[in-house]
Image 1 (tube, rainbow, N blue to C red):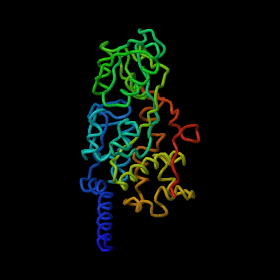
Image 2 (image 1 turned 135 degrees about the vertical axis):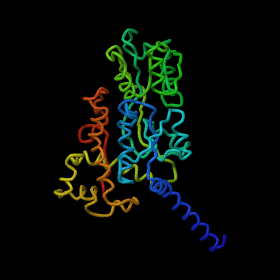
Image 3 (image 1 turned 180 degrees about the horizontal axis):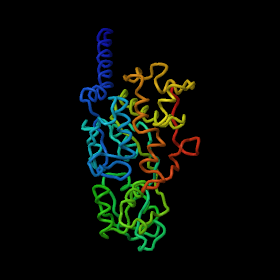
Image 4 (image 1 turned 120 degrees about the horizontal axis):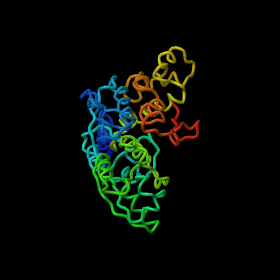
Length: 338
């Protein structure tokens, strides 16, 4: 190949790569709204309230990204997706970002051409039954009917678990958590299986939650997190580092209430970089230098968001567990802001 032709080919490829890397950010800025793929309704994680406004742990990450990119956490359009429709919505461009308890797996990352940019909740699959069923272990569910969402890792894990334990079950397939709950309450299935966090969220909304138990077995690893499309590295970096800004803020003791005071008084070099007081980290992302400060100020740091939506004092009642900071024995850990 002649040098001039080779140079032209490389230049064209570079231009295409540059265009691809800016596409989502440009689209979001031009639209003035972040299209965020959310759950159809999972209490504590992503669900509309009585006024139709979306609230929850995952929703607050969408709000943080909107605050970082658009300067306003309210500039989000929540697009409800099911286990079967969520990835199509992301691949087609209907949503800019998917944040709805989706598990990071090999095939989703590679075959579906997505990037899981962080893990905002470390989870595992469990089972919920009525106390009156009289079982205390998932291994006692031989012959049971089990409600399960289609198009999920849950479906595959269930088959693996029962096969490995040489027990049988009959699946009752449902489209989403709301249908699973209805079928479970109606007695169409003996057990309901999904991520343990989802079971806790569902149980909190049931009549007489004390009549139901979550069995002790956790049968899988379910690293849940925000998802973007392959090939748009700048957008992936924006979502990734917005999330890490929330984690770093908790590590550094920065809260929604004290962020302005910290910005005025801090002598911590990393906090100065995080809050845009020194350096040009925002410019590296294609944003201004206050991006992270706005993301944190929207609804607080990672710990505040966790406790407000799904923590031990909420009806969901989840302990931090694996989702505690690394300094507290958990897995949540932000790479350095430098």
